[in-house]
Length: 503
Image 1 (cartoon, rainbow, N blue to C red):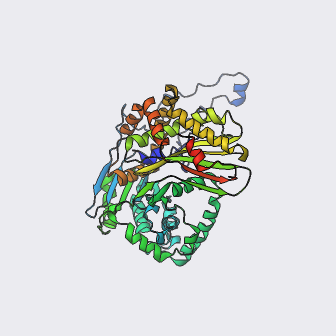
Image 2 (image 1 turned 90 degrees about the vertical axis):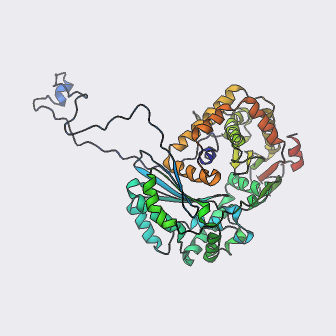
């Protein structure tokens, strides 16, 4: 279900924001003229009476108003066309003057054999560089000329390349996007420059304990494809090059594993522009997703310092099991949490289960927040926390206790109703963005072969009961534990000790 929009609601502190350009407003040149006999400003100050102002109900000369919108505006319908080579083109219209177009590929770090480790990370950084038809300088100038904005991202299962601009430039947007994905030049000096930046990025990851731990628990909790690193390991940085990237793309960037998705574009226009550019992609049968098995595990890295960071996680079903994946999303919203220095106000998570029961009660806990990481067939749900080293054992015990209390049915209807409302609000607000809407179209089609109606997602959320939440949590914490710790970990209890607290 709505995997993009739902997965962006990672904490009650707020949904993931995007860079939004300020709106530009047209100003009318019509100015209401006043009579030459109208008393001036000083006359008004002295109490003199002035001529009456023109009524706001009077229509302005030469200004015509657009027709009003109907009382009920039907949502735009998604249209999908599958080309003979298996590539899908999908779009929905929008009254917005801008359009977002993305090319989404069923290719992430799970498809990296050991020899290719780090390839998708480097491909993300090499997006929109020089192509066989354009230098990087020319590509940047063309994108600037249409006021466009580009981005690329790589995850464990999928990659995305997107461009955003006014819809009058749809042909230029599509041509630049497809050229950048299909015909990268991988010039040596550009590859080497990005590799240098990747080394800095990998080194900086250790300065982000939460991000570092969430990456580590995937490697500790899974065997198989999902254990492959999302970030290029340091050992791979000296081996990655343009030739390796070309080989990886030839093997994985095939038509049946691609979706061209757009929001704010007429389908026939998109099809007319895009089909000649991508219809010759090789028609290769879609590769079976590499297998992963959840096993649980323990990761610890002692770096010293004045804090202990920890994460406890368990397996949850993936998006192919829609109801339980939605339940995991609502459970994450319900538990919420945040940092001890979170600003107050609605939507900041201060009403959530972990905030009220842990952060408000124990000043030694600096951060405590629920998280999810959900894929097609599996996922992780857990709690990340940070405390002083002396309080680390107690903080982990508190995290276990709160999960057990939820499983034991201590959540009341008010807690659940608030979590359900927050989940629906987060998803619907995200889908108001045309960029996220286009991304959601592309990723859902890659996962399901179609885009599920948003009403179906909302209905699933509404149907969840207290018993569903308790039963789901009980089932989750009965699975093997995945544990991660970073910082001063000397006082962190053993894996078996922590695991026993969930029994």
